[in-house]
Length: 76
Image (tube, rainbow, N blue to C red; front, side, top):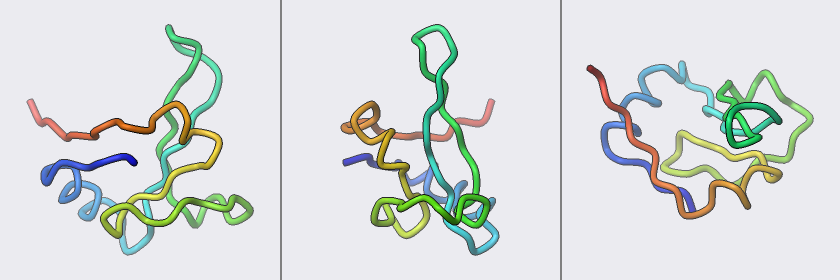
């Protein structure tokens, strides 16, 4: 399971415009993977996970790489 901090949930709700925010991965980056954020409406053919805190859905291919993660939002 992926958890959202209260700050992250509030931020995602603010930018979601009523759509689910999606989290997926693609090849690249230092570790070989890059996180990909988008809106569910832009990816209609993917079978997304059940919603997390009614704002975030996960690409099933990404779940094994991010399971157990906690997502936070920090503004500096």
